Image 1 (cartoon, one colour):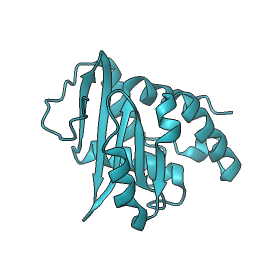
Image 2 (tube, rainbow, N blue to C red):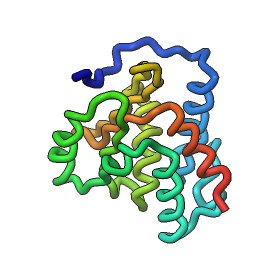
Image 3 (cartoon, rainbow, N blue to C red):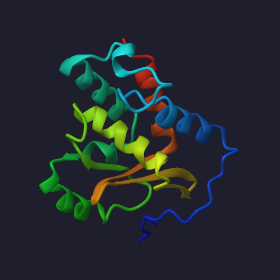
Length: 166
């Protein structure tokens, strides 16, 4: 069975338009308060309060692969190692999100922060598996706080989920 390569040894193809759009949004326009001076915040999109974040999460999972619905694992710090162990066997082209859920004020802010930090610190890679462009993100701060594998299409659709939030 094929396995994901979980390293950062690939070159970065900056000319890809989808890559440019993804980096621009998740790094420079990150919607988490205090992460970027260039971005609109979740509040600016009308995403305020628990009900709004729940609607956003639902929309995001509907715009991802079915595998992500089973492998969306926000964790407390003491749960991270078992969650990382669980996703080791996930094979291409399935998606997963394992991240520290209270790294920010809300779970959703923690997820977007983890993706932003992976771009900011170069702990990401983009590879193609079975014709699907896949992004691998890892977030470290003394220990592994997040490991995320998402399709390029998922990342693009999540941008639309936020920008079209009503």
